[in-house]
Image (cartoon, rainbow, N blue to C red):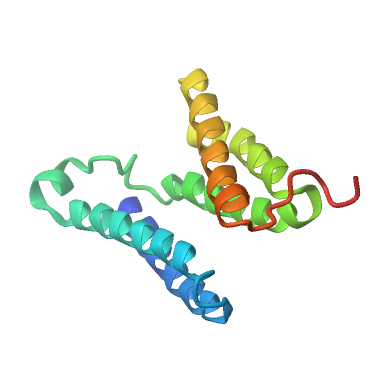
Length: 147
């Protein structure tokens, strides 16, 4: 049986390990925030994996979406879209890149409550702007560098 939550959870934990090593090159205070976020992602991923191992939850395949390899298409597409958006952010600007990512993720994630999704996206981007640009003075690009 294919366990999507286990595969995705382990992949996220592995990604966090790689990103943790990359953050070694950051100055001491600059690595604090990404590492806190990585710990949060790891904890949530471990909870997702752990929940899939519980007999009561695992018996019903809660959140797994099926037992065929085809159920891995959505997580793989979400990972690819995120990686491409992060790479593209260098050229189109961070915030435009994240707005494009949010739009691309709508069909991939099967978003039904579009109003709440847009609201959550705007709130998240405002918080990122406030924390990084205003408080930490990190130069996240507001527009494409060529403009």
